[in-house]
Image (tube, rainbow, N blue to C red; front, side):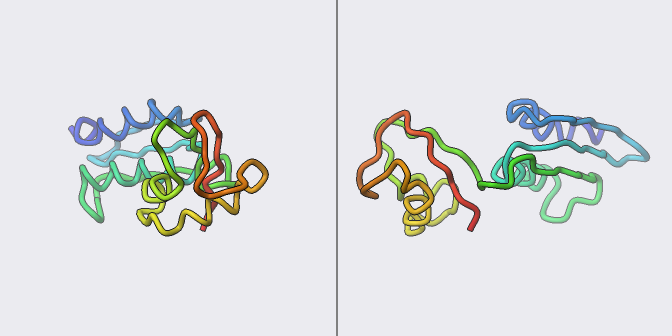
Length: 125
């Protein structure tokens, strides 16, 4: 029963390709663990947990580690995007676009010029 409640979390874990993951149900509590690729993926999983179980769910234990701690996330630029739009997606604040620009100075000369297909580092801040 509790597994069904958190099926959205398990589905997201598969979509995000969480590695070394497993799920166990014991005494009405769901225990999940695995390794997310980035902190952003881990945050997405926790957001899903909270959607189903509330801010402090008592019927789930999640042990999610992060494989790549060098960046918060990686983002492939799509047509029509800007650094401020990307910043809003990851940081919920478009004004932090300069953090992304500075982390990608090796490929960006101007924060107003990005191109579809560029792979950007979204830094931990």
